[in-house]
Amino acid sequence: MSEESNENTEKKYTETLGDPTGIEFFPERRGDKIARGWFRTLFVGEGRDNLQKLKCERQVHNVISESPLIKLMMDALKTTGCAIDLNRHISCEPCSKVVTGGYDAEMNQIVVCQNTATSKSAVHGALAHEMVHMFDFCRAHVDFKNVDHLLCTEIRAANLMHCSFMSALVMGTASLIRIKKQHQECVKRKALASVMAVRDLSPEEAKAAMDRVFTKCYNDLEPLGRRLRRNSEDIHRVYRERYLNGYGYS
Image (cartoon, rainbow, N blue to C red; front, side, top):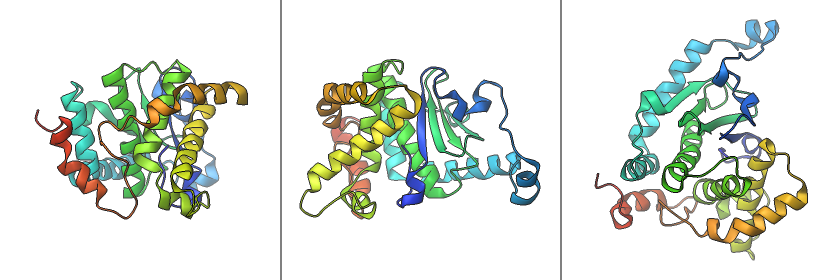
């Protein structure tokens, strides 16, 4: 799930499109169009797709040029044999209002939602999250139709890119006494929300899947090698340490 660090933006999430389930969030992926009312088109500014697309593409370029975290993910993808071509593998598109990005495994393409990921931080969050899915697809041949596989990659994306003690504290889901447990609960909550948005699972099925995969997937920290702490130098540290994990040589 991609997020900015406040409660309102937490409601937006990204989806993994390994099969047609969830495709309604990205109608233009398969040739449809987003329906817009005349009022919102005239007075709110919706429908300015070309302008939004240009702004989104500029933000993507800036993030990729400047972010150590995104540079590391691109190095890791290249090392595993899946180098990113910006024109081929990243696409700015209009999406449903409840998502900021997605990974289309069928097309092997990251979608950045040009109408909802409008800030630099939102674009950064979407790219970071979806690059974890792309990395997992390349490295581990994730089958996104398999609930265990899908849940595992969502656990990893939440663990590596979004949940931290400070972000959980801001959201009111962490306590100073139970930091580690609260971090794990944040990861579980975000991963389950992403999976449940595109899979019709009962609470019992979701819990069983979480029990099967959580420990293994939570402890898999590739390609970062560590969990990122909010308001720390960890992002720069993981980039400097990328060679220790075998990335950045190619």
